[in-house]
Length: 292
Image (cartoon, rainbow, N blue to C red; front, side, top):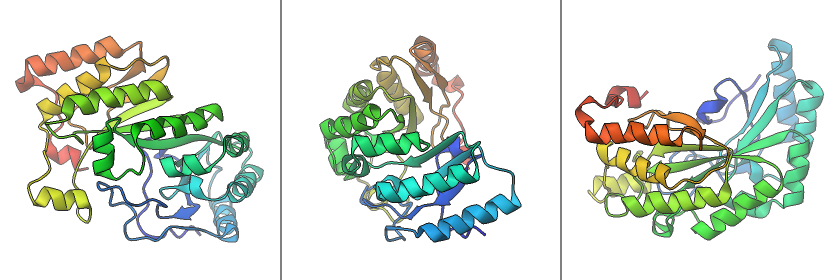
């Protein structure tokens, strides 16, 4: 059987995927806002363990159409390891449509374009990349380990390999003082990357993180829903994407928006304009719903 070790996290779009913990923890694990893997030491699991879990699942359930390789940074595992795992998955379930994983900037820097291209041919076709911000001050404060130029460079490696990127931006990460710069600089980075999917989440202090400690000292600005809507509008206004799916449907968002860029860009900006002009009637999610 599949015995998950510790808490397991996955992107919202992987809700119907089989989750395999190819690795445990996160190889970087220094981001000030993230508490997901602070209780784990990063390591790559044994292929034999994973083969047994795949075999058990195959005996108990119908073949999955999607597989997500957890934990936080599976791409940091050796390409040979990932290649063998992908071969086993597709030999067991030829009908699998997609295998995906989180990818840190550090992992994207380690894997060569040739390795990523080969893994893509074996089925690893999508990476989830936490860009978080395009503003270098914000990136340094978050301890992402890269600046905006390096973020663009490593993301382009995935593009060169033909892998789809799904990228995330953290609204509110620059506080009130850097809200506009955070939005504008983030748009510049996303424009340079041209990812297939773009989503926004809201920076939220979580117990056990440096951001939480900063918040407890009163040093972190909590942008209210109106300020977040204004920041999101600034971000959308500055996007110049050719063909990307946009979502702000994560539970942390006060306002849920969805569309395809650039087709729906004007409509989403118009929605935000109405929110900012008449905030009392804005369709903000209540706090209890954001906590779900």
